[in-house]
Amino acid sequence: AFLPALAGAMPASAVLPLDLPGAGARLGDRWPLTIRAAMEMVRREALARTKPGAPVALMGVSLGGMVVMEWAARHPAEVASVVVGASSAADVSPLWKRMRPRGMTMVAASALERDLGRREAGIIRTVSNRRDLWQETIRSWTRIQQERPMSLATVGGQVFAASRWRAPSRLDVPALFLVGKRDRLVHPDCSRQLARRYRAEIVEHPDAGHDLTTDASEWVVEQMLRFRRRNMPPRAPSR
Image (cartoon, rainbow, N blue to C red):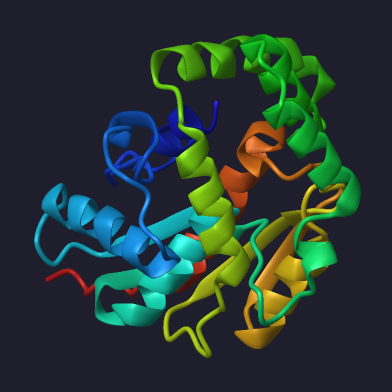
């Protein structure tokens, strides 16, 4: 429900979903060794699909959050703002908070499961707290994995790159951090530490898990709109 809700809330803006290398529409691309290299691949695609000079507001969850922080730090002139959900970094949080032991165990067990439905069910029950959406999401994610199966090399490469990624020392664009207080995969403290580093606002959902855009799609859109209104440049006076 997230993308349609976001597009409907911002009718004057182009909402451009981007896949990471090795997944979705970019299934044929190899996942690179670093978050920075993955960012540059995503960035090139985004800039090719947007109007030159148009303000770009970035939003990413978890690994996607690392990508948008890297983009904003390396190319601040291109970025109007960033929204980061449920993310972390090696230099601000310990490993046991970046991947909580119980969550790590559940994800590892799911990865060894050969039945796609049961594998996706194990992951979803780890990252989402919306029991009412579990069955629908399991069917959807299973279909995606059947049509565009991510390789173990991609998954392993993502975990390796994310585990080594260090957050930029500063972000020179407005930033908002979002997190679910009941995230069972990544401790909410990881987002709190990132927000503290950048002296940025953080908003916490009382019940959401790691997959914020599944568990609280309307809430995420509402927070993004509020943030956007506070940080939009003032309009020129009419003549």
